[in-house]
Length: 416
Image (cartoon, rainbow, N blue to C red; front, side, top):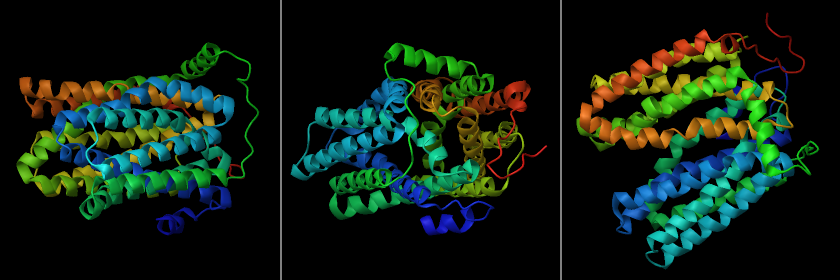
């Protein structure tokens, strides 16, 4: 994976592939591969254990609940103890939890509460890990946009390979084997982070109370109109667009084109994300959020194509298109956050923006089914299309978003 990405990411004035970035890239790519295998492993393992779809839902919820509850504290701890220490600790905790999960399935059929408990531990550790994912990039790369684009391409490739690899491993050795491999990815990630030679900034939160640290992070977050405006709109999208897309889209595609078609469609989305990341390697708009918002207009052709029951090739093209603009937007957003927020509060600010982005997703997923039964899945998705375009109009109408300028890397003149 690294070789394929390195070929495109190496283009530029400043070297990207320093030893530190190489270690960080390797750890993140391997860890992401394990993460993309996990939903398949959990679904197959819990269903195979006889706990049914409700059991799968309980296990997935047991991961998300502690993640959502603790992500803000993860940002505080990352600023207090450094992001790298928190990420290594989180990797080691997940190494243990996934190893225990693998042993439990190897020994027989674990009880549902045991699976739920181990999943909750993993979700809590992920909350400690996630704030540092973004804040570590400025420590290991000088050209943040190119680094973020390279990491986005790697993430997309992992999303393409992970589910298929999980299916193969389940066939070879059962779901327990997937948990073994997932545990190994956390070990690799921890070792790579340990090998980094970055110099952590002095802690600015030492001696301060947790409440004060949280308040300082909130003050920094709400002081940036461009940031909280995007998060508010993303929260609306979570309910009306992002949340309903997966459950309703999966149902419509499998009903109309068969189960195998859904895998192909998701592969098209992953391939599109790779393309979006590659575009972001070279294209450096002077107003990144405005460019990203304009590109995101195309994202909402996905719910529209689903609502209109378009033929499979058209659906695949729509998903590939939405994947590409999502990949591009993700790089524009991550780079803006990393360059516009000072390092001493970046972890806490990141925690707030991640929390705001994901908290509405379960609401949208939970309401999608009842809403579809009442008004039809097609109408729910069509409403998402309309809400999506209205949200983009709001984004482009906010001067703080429209006018946010790109911060050029060291040695590169800013564009006018």
